[in-house]
Length: 136
Image 1 (cartoon, rainbow, N blue to C red):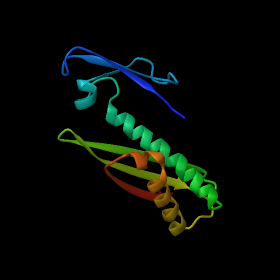
Image 2 (tube, rainbow, N blue to C red):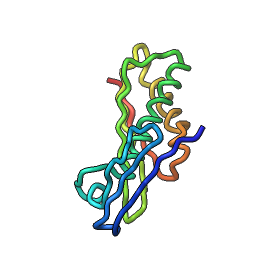
Image 3 (spheres, rainbow, N blue to C red):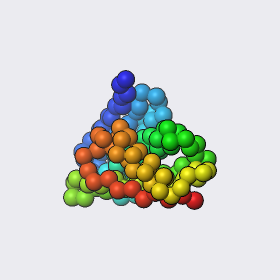
Image 4 (cartoon, one colour):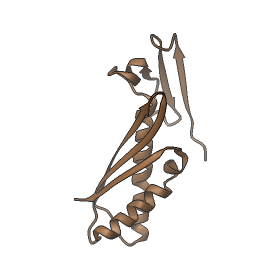
């Protein structure tokens, strides 16, 4: 399986602007710029997209890990923060809050750790990955 996306940039690094489009068209000429990356401009940025990818992949993997252990979650909510420091993406911080009937805290921590280690995005990211997992 392959998925693809396209970036188009016009102009200089600081004053220019670009668009991102994905194969699925969920992003279709979505704006990104220096301001949307390094300030509070309108549009997306690579770090935000990396965070979305990691949160989505981890959450889906956790669903499968829980299922293999005999549990079906009522809800999993995962946030992810990607850190960019001195021009280097250094860390991905996952925080998951879960409603999983019948699971013990120890079982949940084991499943969450498995998902963190084995989701395809975690495996692709060459950076520190932290996880805070809690049952609600």
